[in-house]
Length: 351
Ligand code: NAP
Image (cartoon, rainbow, N blue to C red):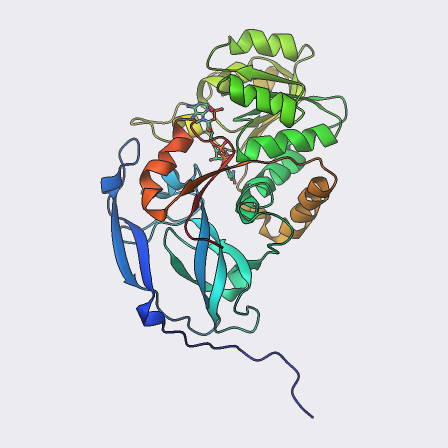
């Protein structure tokens, strides 16, 4: 009887002639990242080994966490080694495959690194359908940031109808999704963002109930105005001063979700910790951190929820697309300067 199992596909392109530009980390940044922290190299793309595929990177995800990955020291993930290609998520097209799970032409999301071509393990690459959504969205609302918002809010925040949810970096990749999920749960949602354009977007486009411009408003006074009964859930993306201010206005049994602390990532000194933490005691409240990768086994659940929202018109998203792999070090800085408006991606190559 004929063996009907799919056979490994091995396509021998002339991969030695494909030139692969890469950003390699060569110095541990001090404060803000600089171009001189990287070396821009060109090497042959290489050939996929057993269980691997060669992927042409189309879009790269730029994430605030990249700054932490460049530091030495203990974290939830090993630091990028000096001399290694800078770690990054990306979406790309399979050019050659040495695994039956991936075929030439498949579109996949995975950890590609900051380069033109990546050799990825087939079992670590997720196929996506380019007809269902624009490709950059699989790096944003329908990708890791969307999943971060979903699991952080649903598992730690556990929002209930009628509760007040506050989200910082509300116009960004994670915050925008967190706030929209909270709206679907019947919550009153207040965003905190920098500048009138982002605040207008959060209310008018994303449907938040109110937005606070932390760059021009008194955040404590604005929170009192918009969260009269106190804050039941705080989805914290920024840490620092804003976290401290929110802590003073918690409701009883509040849940504070520590998703990130972007205001602290480029500090030259130590991270600033929360000063007003005793509010957790007075209010019988909880503060808990999480890392999205912990939820890998539940990603299908999260994707299903996000796709469901998108199909129902309840998940709006925008991407901030910058052209050119060569812009990587400067483009990354947009995140820490609040210059990105939506999920920040680099377009590496045409589709
Ligand atoms: P993003 O919100 O799209 O972009 C970052 C935004 O942070 C900037 O646009 C800026 O918005 C704001 N920001 C920058 N510096 C700030 C400061 N000093 N004070 C206040 N706000 C500042 O980024 P993202 O990808 O969605 O990530 C948001 C947060 O989630 C980050 O802290 C990130 O590390 C975290 N995260 C955590 C996980 C996890 O597993 N726990 C996974 C993904 C992301 P404004 O213009 O509004 O200031």
